[in-house]
Length: 126
Image 1 (tube, rainbow, N blue to C red):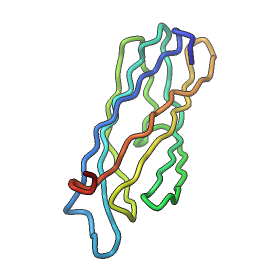
Image 2 (image 1 turned 60 degrees about the vertical axis):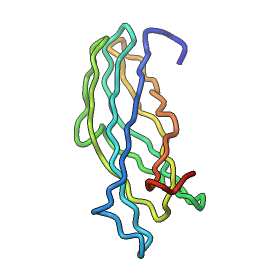
Image 3 (image 1 turned 120 degrees about the vertical axis):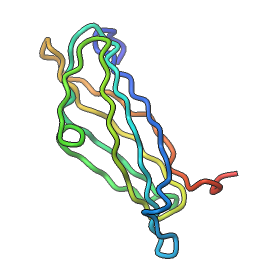
């Protein structure tokens, strides 16, 4: 969204969970830590999430739900919220992308876009 009042930025750090993965059975587990920052000028509440998880074969899993890890954080301007979660895919490499539905203090509903990020077993990509 181009309106500076509704500026939510999202950053992601991922890591492969070797101890929770089972490559022989095509199970690859990943953790991700997300930081959501309100760089707008109005308080906004994170109401719900929408994920598209794509494996290396192009298979897509869609996930929707309220809030993040059971929370619907209200972010004042300049405030951030960090949480960790995980995903399991059946290929060594995949991607995730999505959006958060936000509700601003002035009643405006808007999407905070989560740019695509990679899930990859170390050494899977050259």
